[in-house]
Image 1 (cartoon, one colour):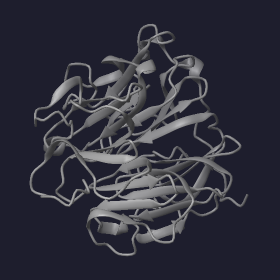
Image 2 (cartoon, one colour; image 1 turned 90 degrees about the vertical axis):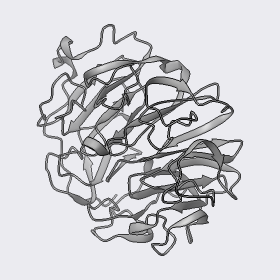
Image 3 (tube, one colour; image 1 turned 45 degrees about the vertical axis):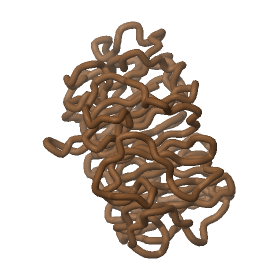
Image 4 (cartoon, one colour; image 1 turned 60 degrees about the horizontal axis):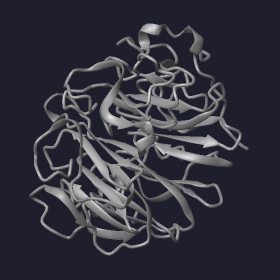
Length: 391
């Protein structure tokens, strides 16, 4: 494998050093989905709008009930619109947080600080929350709700009013997965093709131009895709032969192709092979390699790549000391990861307690939100905000 110079994390993981004050009670046996960080919109789902410095239980949802959780929105001050959706194993969907554009799918524009069911929605297999809209897969077809201001719902319908309940996306069937970004949408079909629609700025649709599309268009010259992961303004795709493709905004290096130029068509992420899984955060990218190590690239001004620097990376940097990553998510300025020992760690900015370690101090290296044995296997964050979830 040809890789850039390897950079280790500033500090080795020190799980045993975590003080009990940073842990929820009975973390080892606690069954609940956990959330922490910003909460002004009720996006942590615990019935309040108070920020949480340590992981707090999401009301009424156990980890065993959840198939997938996706955080949406974010932003600061008046623009804040954090929310979340959870796909349960019975095929129903719950939502909570901000609802200014109908992104909770409950027929209203009223925010709620606790999970409630998206009425009439069942049989769902995948879900993804974007900046202000949500996508869901049911029977191989896509339903969408929330804002359609940039045509991100893919319905070919009016863009001026929010859609407060799920409506069908045009054209596509046999859909395997979906990813909602900032004002655009991505679908992976079972045949390995990728389709996009919505806002086209920065080339985020990957169709060879920057045109906004109101219905799904196939990404040209891209085949045999096994998985996708969608950031705010960029997309990552992992092909069957282990190549990672990227397109969209590149100003922070999030395309990983040794450039800071946007690309409106897929480009290869450099110096990567033997990739097992990919994760796009707000403006960065991560890849778990076959040997268990982690590589990161893109925005790093708040040390959210965890490489010990605050410099954006235009090509992947391998984080040698970080092994066993099962899941990674990141918001505007931080990253959290679930490890194979059941712990949840984080790095980057922490002024809003988004690392969940009981403080609002930015650490020099990694912190621990949940200890080994907590039962956590997955993490999520709001799209551009400072709230995190573990399940």
